[in-house]
Length: 495
Image (tube, rainbow, N blue to C red; front, top):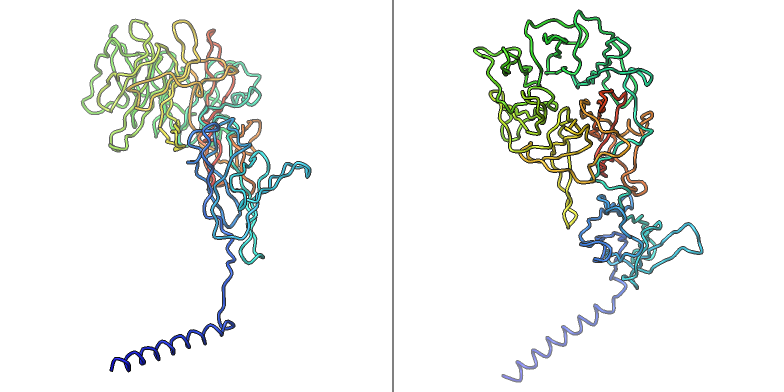
């Protein structure tokens, strides 16, 4: 019985082995697929602290369709990219070669990346990566670019000394006073020159298309007092009477008078009145039951910065306003920050050096950490103003709505070719990136080199800072407009 069982198993084994033998003789029935993949699956730079800390964390985009490999966030100005090692991953390709083109066949160089993956690559040359698939036929060319900023992207850049513009009254006009505001989606510039008053309007300060409206009014305007709400413009006469206009050309008296106007909040214009030597808060139009009330001795009754209103993301129904600097009732300068919430004024903790006529506006600043992650901050900037020793060119910044101020870094400092000024007008106006490229007179400064064939978003908006006029220590008005922007904002992101 045992012998029969053993014999049975031997027969089964023989049949099994025979089957295998038969299958392996039919090689012509088995097909093998040779890979045609030329995909680059990953790209990064190797660690090199002598070049840049955390260089290996820089993110690279791989455009498989367009054949582009690049870092959209450029490396800092001056980074040496002449000898970097790249870590490149593929889908089991047969060959990968790196070509460095210097424009001279005698200097051009080639690296067999599969054989020598740790050879350094000179990214100051035109670098191409050609990948050949396992089938030996399919290949793909990639342009490889390590972008380096040509200027500091976080610096505030202004147009060159030859890139400024004159006010719309023309470069030959001697301007006695001016005030510019953003009103109903247009820029309104009021100018007193050659004993006449003229309003100039444009929807695009980037160009030269201003419409002029000569003003014929029954009072002597105080242009520096001009304020704008969403519905109307307000201005004092030389004697302090408040006038209102919905188009900037036709003005009517409101029947109220003020010592000074300090700003607006929603549809109200806010100001200071003098009541038998006592300075009081007042407004137009007055809400039901409102009675002018005394300003505290440390409140700036004139000369403060523009009053700017913002809305907190945590309370969209309660706009807040701030202003800095000015002169108090005792004629002393202050650097305090004051806030208004629609009901009451309050002095905030933050302050700058005492001055009058400073420029205050909200903008953006950026901070990049050691791992090249960039964070954008909404930032308040204060530029210039007249201090006790004269007109200053200082720049202050606050990222907490004026609760604290600090001297801005050198990257945000005003350039030497822009003279210090006070009582200038300032506004932020967006410009289309495409329009900026062909704008007359204004000069663009490049922010970074761009990988060949990489496209940009055509509808990108650049938030430009415009500074109109301003006065010097002799109270002479500058007949000029300056335009500036943070470096990285002047160039649209790679999509």
